[in-house]
Structure formats: structure tokens, C-alpha cells
Image (cartoon, rainbow, N blue to C red; front, side):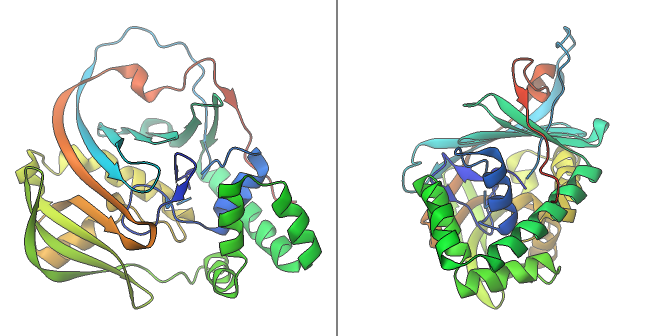
Length: 311
């Protein structure tokens, strides 16, 4: 669901605000050209985007929440992830891409600042994206070794590495699970003990998927961050909006309820460790302040990219 790469170099997996390598990510990457439109996270994981091409009119800034985290990983040390949160609008800035959720428009926008392009995701385009990913997966599985080699030659190194990982027997098996809706859900377990990261005292929680530890979180009560549940409502809405095509995507905002069930209080991850990609993120600041309306708009000079349609 989101271009989820960190600076185009690393894919983020369970527990990070980005998307893990997935068939959906490759489908989007191939459709948009040489710049990997990903992550993890995401994340992916793991997505599709949009446009609000109206010129921003001067409007009163509304009070919102700003959460800034520092990223430490190969090639991305010193970069930040910033969330700007209002009840029905969220801006998520990752190294290399930006995601804007607009609950008031029932849409999500993903921006590639370097290329000045974006996509708009709605419930309908999410269905189209999932269908396109299924078609792409079928195509990849049917390719001969020679066809795969030709395709890899046209990819930049980072995208090629992602493609090679997907085309392993394990990767194809995981893709099959994603396409058939059988992706195992993440489990959250107390891993014992507390720790301190920056100014935060937190409790350790382990994220397990398919019986294997994937990441470790250190979570603090949201009251310790100076937040209320209402302050995070926009993040919850954004996670719920993306759920239909989340697949293998994992993100702290996706697991807030699960974390609460495990620790017994409303909590938020202040530190995340993902050994598979040698990555850590730590919250540095949490602020409540007025947010300018244009934070949640797509710049007028960005070019819209259409959602890949299944062929």
C-alpha cells in the first residue's frame, strides 16, 4: 500500500510505518517505472495514490498532533518519519515518499516528491489495485527463467533485489497466501522487561508472524506521550481505510488495538527494532500545535498517475 521504501534502498517489514516487499509493491513498481514507488512498508506495505489539485485558500490552522521519529538503518541513518495527525486527516512523511489520508474525502494520496507525481486511492481503486496485483502475480509465476532475466535487466538494483526475493519458492508461497487472503496476522506478545529510549520509559512487546519473531516494540502509555485516544483517532482511521489491501503490511498504527490488549493500557510504540532489515526507529518528539491546511493537500504542480488496471 504505499511506496514503502526508505530512500529507495530498504523495504520495511512488520512493525514499521512503511511496507514490506510484496507482489502488490512489485506490481506498482513495474507500472510506474524505474523509481521504486514503494514499503514495509510497508510495508507496500505496500499502494495507490491521488490528487487534490485545488489551490489552497488561506484557512485557519487547526490544532493537531505531530510525532517525529528518527530512523536508523543502512543507507538511511539520520532520516526522520513524521506524522501530522488530525481526526480525519493524516500526513505521513517517510524518506522518499509522503502519504496523505483524507477521511473527509474517503481517499488516500501517495506522493513521490522527487518525481512530483502522485496517485489517489479510494475504495474502488483499492479493488482495482488488488486485481492488478493478482494478475501480476499470475504473470510472474508463468514466466520462464529467460523472461525473468530480461525483466530484471530493466530494473534498478534495489527493485531487482526485491524482485529476486519475491521469486524464491518462499516468496512465491507468501505471494500465494497474500493473493488468496491467507496471510497470517501478526501476534503481539509481552517479551518481558522495560527499557528507556530517549526520554521514554517503555515496555517491550514482540511481534510474531507465522510463528516467527519479526520485530520488537517498546511501547509507552499514550498519556506518557501527552496524548489522548482522540489525538490518535486519525491514525486509526487511516489504518482501517487501508486494511482491504494491507496484505503483508504491518505498521504501528495497524496494531494499536492489539498492543492495548497485550499490555492492558492504551499504548503507542516509541521504539521499533526490525532485525531482518537492520532497522530501528525511535520517537524523538511529540507535539500538539496548529497544522496548516496545505499539509493535507497535493501540490498543484504534481502529476497524477493512474491506478494500474488488471489486464
